[in-house]
Each structure stands twice: as C-alpha cells, then as structure tokens.
View (cartoon, rainbow, N blue to C red):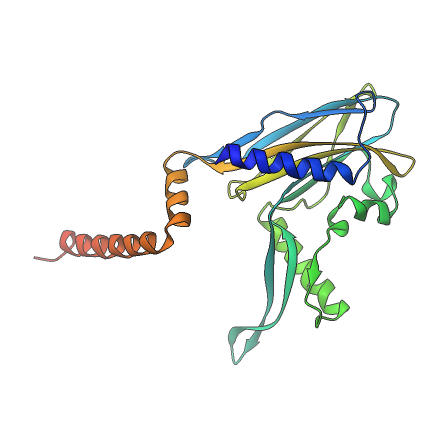
Length: 250
C-alpha cells in the first residue's frame, strides 16, 4: 500500500514540476527527516524536520499539505426555545485536511497576494471553494469558522512557523503533527523567493499511514465495511451481555 502511495506521488510530483520553475542545485536543496510517519496505537503526535540549503540569498517557505481534498459542511448553531439547533450552513470543496506553512519572513513581506495564491502559500491563499448560492459575506464568515476549527485541532497553523536560517545558506524547521493527523499522501514543498517571485521549488513526498494492529483494522473496515459493521454490532452485543452477567446482583 505504501509503495502504491509513493508511486502515485511520484506521478503527481512530475505533473507539479511542469507548473513551477524548478530549482537548480545551486539555488535550493531541501529534504525531510522521514518520508513515512507510522501511526500506531500509542502515537501521540510527532515532528517532521525539513532542512536544506540555498545559494544566492532569498527567503525560504515550506508548505506541508495532504493531497486529498474534501468537501466540508460548516453549520451555525442557534438557540431556539432554549435548545441549540443547526441553522445556516455552507459547504466548501477542495478543503485540505492538513496544512502547515513556515517561512523565514512574514508572508505578506515576501510576495504579492497573487504570487502567494499561485502556490497556495498561506491560509489566505488556499483555493477553497464555496457553493455558488453562498454570498461573499457568509462565505468569509463560515470560512473563518472552518479555519478556527482546524486550528483548534492542530491541523492548521495559528500563525506561520519560523524557519531558522543559519549563515544565510542553511535552513531548518520542525513541522508538528498532532495525534489525530489524517492519513494520506502528503507533499512537502520548499520554495525559494527573491524580489517577490518564486525562483526555485523542490517537493518531497511524505506518507502518513496507520501501522500495527490499527492498520489491519483500518484496512479491513475500508475494504469490507459491511462485514466490519456486523462484527462491530455483534461485539457490542456480546460486551453488553458479558457486562450484565458480571455485574448481575445475586
């Protein structure tokens, strides 16, 4: 499964390379400390080290995101007769489940908004789409709520992380991953920016997958959902009967 992930990501990286100016070895070199994050039963989160070197000066930006993009519905709750109920809602498409960004300088100082949007650098540059019938004011309100929810779960940065630049050539930054980080194929993109333009880019693949018994259970649940559901119900019934026998009063 992991090999399949890496093969698909290799094709994706080849396609992405057609749309951006490649970095030469003299401009930008970047790598990551690990290309596989395995989520086991005792996984409590981890950090990924992104490091590299640049030549000729400039600023460095690192973006980490998962390739899968989902549809997400954001609902507003209103109090009606003392009960909280769902009221207005908005559906967004192309929502990345995890997104982290780090830079050597504030993003607004690096490039114009158009350049940042081109490479989806920063939360304001994400290409999240709302339903056509949602007006602009409501879209911004619900989008802010969506980002706040992601930030509360550690899946989006509250603020861009800072990249340490050593001797104007070497850089490194640690990207935190929460305990409930989504599984999937990730891209770790490093950009070199000079005079407001992206002049170099390099992308590294990263796979986040379940390991151990949790991986077997996850795979079984996805490949044979009906049987998994039946077994889960039977297991719950058996647990209830066993608990009733153990705690039955004489």
